[in-house]
Length: 208
Image (tube, rainbow, N blue to C red; front, side, top):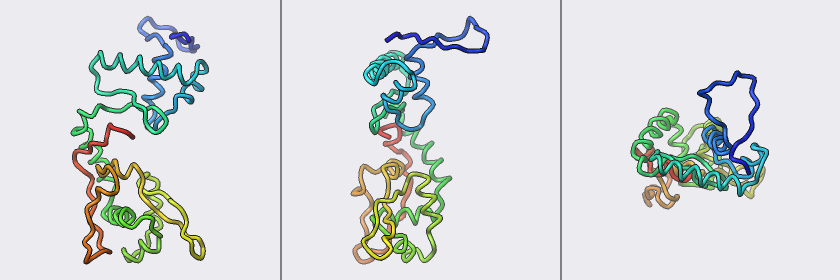
């Protein structure tokens, strides 16, 4: 597989224009997406080679990044590949994500999310019974933020939806697993602890 890919363009050629190689295209694709991109999909977009070729290009890129001392690498994540910052930068990246998340999560959102986290799999009706207000729109918003997902249906009349948290939820709140959630008070099982976005989110820049 050639390292150089011919790319036609209507723009006039410039001496300062960088040489477009297969590796640079792989890099551009990964740089432009926030979700893990499978090697096979990258190969499909390139139109040449296969997933194995793409993985070799990624290895070459990572070797180049290491020599240059940059703050990121291309990592294998969720059956794909993604550009991620190195763990050493988590304290600063975590603060950035903390500000972003807290600006988007209201107190009502956090309360609803906490109930889902502790009671999952949980029905919307059960969440509303605890909160005392309708939560339909809130659940939609939390699903759009990839913090809550539908995990199944209850075995009762109407087969209502059951809700649970996502892997992204663990990342945002700095949890390795749901076992790391603060313990419930056994005398007040319906009172869930307040959730807080961690300041130094060690999972940010780790596996996505």
